[in-house]
Length: 494
Image 1 (cartoon, one colour):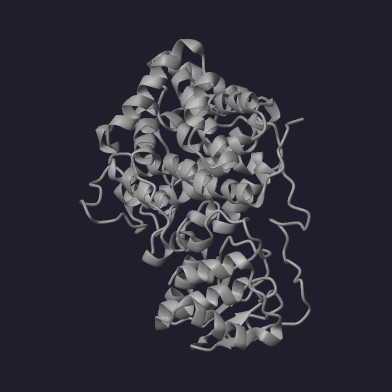
Image 2 (cartoon, one colour):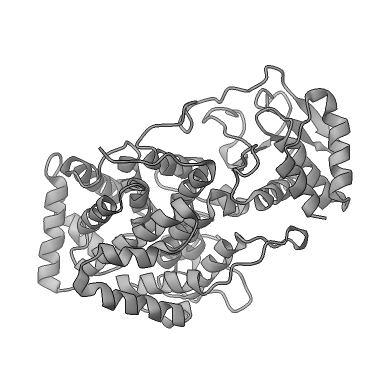
């Protein structure tokens, strides 16, 4: 039985960020894969195109293969067991046949050698095919197993040795070379520590989990990554240089000092480091996907820009809530939380009465709660500040439903100011697109007025105290009781 620690709200946010961060990095790098990276001073964009003629925000094979693993890990399976490896291998074949927009040369060759196989023993047969290919070519240390490995760490947050075994076993399905397995072990160790402690210390800790004869070599490669910019490692199809480019982007990108009044947040590090990863050039989507898994683990889903979260999607029909659910279910051993989330169709509201009132500065924004009927309110987009079920707002197009990770408890958020600011700016962006927007949380009494006040500040330039006073007057009869942290954060914007 795998030991799974009980995660705090902040740790859960970080677990939710692993697969989502990888997908966002992947989609950000797609337009520039084996093409010129953006020129200096111009930020990468999720504009689609690339080698697979992707839609804007669509992720590629990097995340598609990670999803193949996550679908098994999210059931609580021990990924070291033959049955679990069989299922992952079967998912790889299903992906190749149904949804692969691109397949690496090595992976394609391995999968072709087990075509027609199914059932018990498929994982072993695939691993054997990877071994045979290595023995024939002497080359199987590509980046194709590293790019998909981050989610493996979530299944073993309490057991680093078991995690190392699983990372190596899943890698070996397609990549026999021990260096590929080493890279996966190291990156999973980094993801694990980032989720648990919010640091990047796990990468060096992971050296103890690889064979002693290769530790000094890997330590030297990490040193080299910290000395040079990501572009120093342009031939990043190799597992070592791919890891170096990703680690260089993360370790050499400064973490900003938190200054909400100036619009600067510590978690901007995630955005800036992914820009640096894409700037490395060559296999841009893969390097950024690798970096994104670790950055998401460090900064959480709440540290990922909402514009990216709204746009990112990919095979087999996943969007942000699906990627978050796969990560959380993996970390939870296949079990949702005590109220059935993620995975439930509806979340129950803490109060029975619907809130539906227009924002005092913009009647195109409706302030509400979980009881609010979005269709009846006439909205075309929803910004949720709480957990929602899969069918909570079934009448609203899924691409116009944005969920913000924001917990209504002081100290329970990793990026409170950023999340609140992002929510308000998303409302502004949706309004600029012509949408009538429902802004809500569970009860509509704390998070909703906080985000609505921040929206007032952005829209009209009023300070936080005045914006909150306006919300208090508007929602007093509805039980307004902004928690102390949210009050402090709103006023910290100015």
